[in-house]
Image (tube, rainbow, N blue to C red; front, side, top):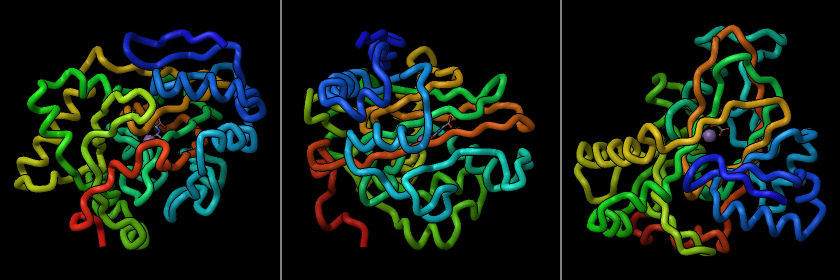
Length: 295
Ligand code: OGA
Ligand code: MN
């Protein structure tokens, strides 16, 4: 396996290894897992992709999430991100599918609004537009390392609240349904996730983050906005232009990502599998004191 960095500091293309190798071979998994801990974003090109193969690969890294209510693929281990409607035609730009893609265009990390956050997401390109529709990644590990020491220390002792309704509300009031709101109450996490393998620390924030515990609402919002801007500053990100056969996995503990727009009349169809974080991934250390846990 060859590791070819995608940019300085994070992100790598892995060559000479397939999803099936990782699914079937312990040594291949160990090599990819080590690269994942180190590089945070991994690109596999020219893969033979189907749902079963993607899931077998993903399961190596931990337990797969079951897709929540309100998302395409609910009840399965797949999230379908598409603008192709049930009739096979591209949906209008104000359709719920299109609005959901818009919400994915805010900087975020997946599943921070759930009671079990995600270790990694694995995204495969099935139908890609001729232009646009890139996915852009930022390292919240490098972002944390760039902060002044006093702020690092403050954040290591801080907790923030995350809610799905909050990020959806930024796109359209009511985009999160009553059912989604009822099943996804706000959750609270530490603002810094320490990687148990290499000890490196990363900011843990997302479009879902709406408040910092112990701060005035406005001041908390400003801190979240400022940290997001610093973490995603121009020149620090990796923007991936999808090619057929591409699969990307990312570390939700140490990155943020966002989708980029594309011409609304062109179809795009992507399939995601998401792996829950376990104790070995450091999730227990992210939990707030019991008084802050959501009811
Ligand atoms: C995701 C996501 C962005 C995109 O799959 O979690 O945010 O470019 N995708 O589709
Ligand atoms: Mn996402």
